[in-house]
Length: 457
Image 1 (cartoon, rainbow, N blue to C red):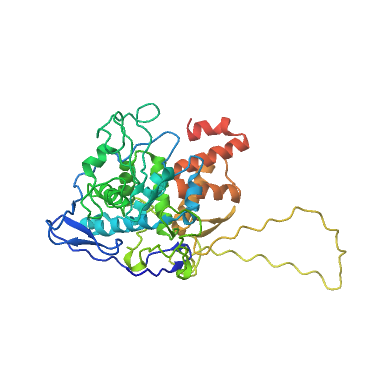
Image 2: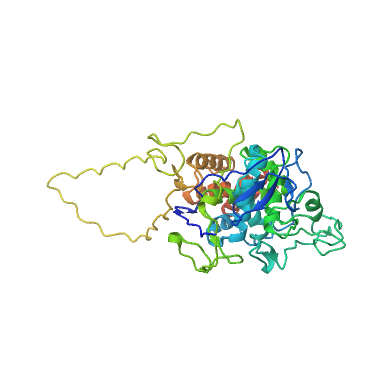
């Protein structure tokens, strides 16, 4: 198996080649792994070997894969981490090699099993990041076969601080004979796993601790019921079915968008941010035993939608004929600034005495922004979008923040205030904006006067 050559983009490593086609028969097919597990193939004979058919249910799976736990958005996210910190740290955190292959295979197989679903590997990866930090929660690591070791188990669902779910598998999957616990890298409740878990790597077993099986099952779950994940409404509904938490759904979709924009690197199984095992530009790597899937074995990233169908989109400001994708590759992809007025020259022959300099605070230079991100000039100053967002998305976020701030009489926000609000909207949705405005009102001493009535108790 040849080592894959990778190329770098502005935001990180991205996949550039089209899908590898899979053979199909009727509505179901069997999955077998080739010498490179990143390339999923399908056998023409259902009776070939012990492989299990992968079928997407026509009705949506209503039982949740996992349930919300108070005070935690997911095992893979530290309770002290804010959503913006999680998203901004994705490229440093890295995706283990075995996990990336499993996410890639899930998109490739589901693209054939249910082409209308448009499942992106980035969405499966985002769920893996939130649920278990790609199989690394609780001191676990992934074996070369993708099995989480020693095993990932969520909190006991005994009804004390969580939902109450009594034992459904006699402790076979979670080791608890009284109550259920979510299991594996994608954190499936045993009852849900027993109803819809699939064999993702064709080894004849369905193991929720195996990220190949768990990632494929996540894809089947999200696509069930005729979901079209290229539509914002279907996407949000599918993630909320997986875990009935809006904070969870907002973070998962934000991470998926960042991954689709290139904010990811491949690391060794169990490795996070250290240099060993990290695949970097120029083909250099710290551990030659790591064999990441090549770019031509990874599916195209599917960018995630922002607007529900029929929602009018704001028109980006700025001149030129740009395509509005926020990459600034054409004039018009960012608003143009009016040139500053020229200074008035003094009258000839007159010399004004030089005034003594007035001590002033040193001017802090504006923070540099990475290339390839959307920028928007506003009355408050330059606003910068998150990695992977377009100028259209940035404009919508800015207009929403200005509208919400105006409701609480903040009609002229500072650049810093507006930037925090816009970043919160793009990474955490409207709930995150509410929290930013609450914090701002608290600082201004207006929360007791305005916040309760306008933002809710």
